[in-house]
Length: 212
Ligand SMILES: Nc1nc2c(ncn2[C@@H]2O[C@H](COP(=O)(O)OP(=O)(O)OP(=O)(O)O)[C@@H](O)[C@H]2O)c(=O)[nH]1
Ligand SMILES: [Zn+2]
Image (cartoon, rainbow, N blue to C red; front, side, top):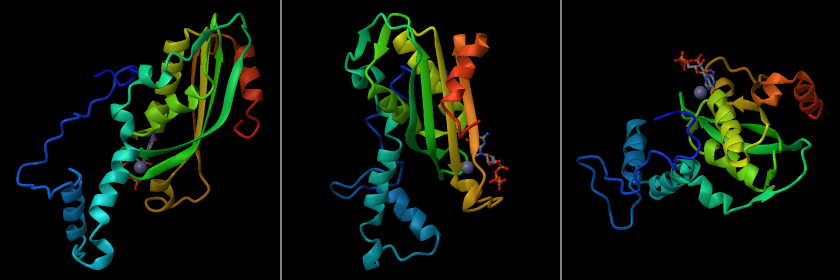
């Protein structure tokens, strides 16, 4: 599958079959037995009071955090792309997000800033954060998240240019590994006029004084 195909609904089957040898109790989430095995794997007693409900809760939480795989962009846009004669830059900044790094399955989180140059169409304001969440709620790397958000906004608006900046902190760098508590990562994707025209790019970046 093309990594950046923004309009695909995802790759996870709705009709998930539990792995061979796993039997589900009535009403149990299909990931719950896997979390039970994980807990056993670290030496836990899965029957102790505090943990009895944990596999089911953790499974539901993980499903929520990865729900972007099954969300449909057109459904969440709900037709909220409007004709407009406005040709000036639109910026939606400080959109917070939470994602999971695909290398360690640990959170990375921060802010996304999006700008576009309309070419006859504008998008409903709330839809840009919704697009961010569709791509954040997957196993990701920050660079691909940045690119996918930009390409999706480009595709649905037909804008003359789209710019996306993502600034984030990665728990795999904070809690473990190199344990750098103050580092953050800044990524950007510049499409169309933001790539070709330095003035447009600088005008956008001036709205992000803490990033540059
Ligand atoms: N470029 C990029 N790297 C990431 C992202 N999230 C995690 N990583 C990095 O992915 C790399 C995986 O490297 P490995 O050496 O295979 O894994 P590791 O032994 O756990 O690495 P350390 O984190 O250095 O301990 C690490 O350098 C992580 O910091 C991301 O969003 N973008
Ligand atoms: Zn990581």
